[in-house]
Image 1 (cartoon, rainbow, N blue to C red):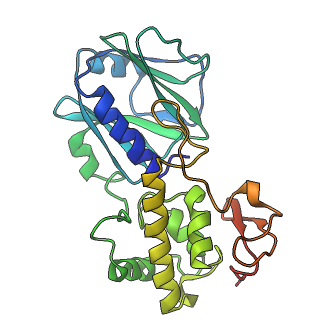
Image 2 (cartoon, rainbow, N blue to C red; image 1 turned 120 degrees about the horizontal axis):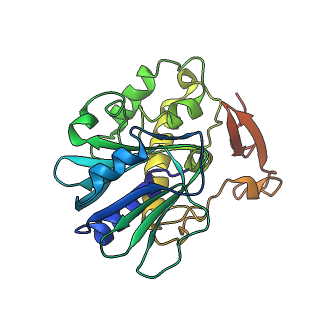
Length: 277
């Protein structure tokens, strides 16, 4: 799944590569997926986009925004898969779900994995729920330790769900998914099932710092090595904790890395450094 570092990387590349281009055609590809949600029909997308110009791109959390004219945008939100740019004369992938053609004969495709939302929205729509119900980006001036502590205290399920539930729910801290969660919790030495009230002051500081350090490094390296950018290049961030580490020694203490299922997804952790609650 695309998380904040990948969203920022792709949005920056879109801004540099697509700004100034004019949409010619939008259509669905040969693949169909029931968990790919559009807010309009393909015909409505095509009719609106044709002749409109790309005016920039940006991101927020795990979402990518491709600006259309002065009033609208394409919102790629909470999704997995590959958004790829194709230069003139280049062959398209055999399999993809969505396609955008530009008047200069370049193209962009989206091949989705798991689920995703691609909405054609007015910019004003972003000030209304559910798009306004997002958390604080971790590398902004607003994400202070005081802000973080307040978010932890206000988490409505702080006594029921562990730290994992808090971090991967975008309306608290924006941009973190299950991919980066593993490294963040490993660096902070916190088990994913730890309940918020059990965290000490030191652990809260460690968790806050681990979020910032992990996100900053991943952004610098263009995202995770198992995700790809707009030009199909893999990211440079190698995860410390992933399915590749199960059974291997912890980099800190040497204990065997374990896998567990928690809150609908896999977690990878050191049973010694991240003690089970």
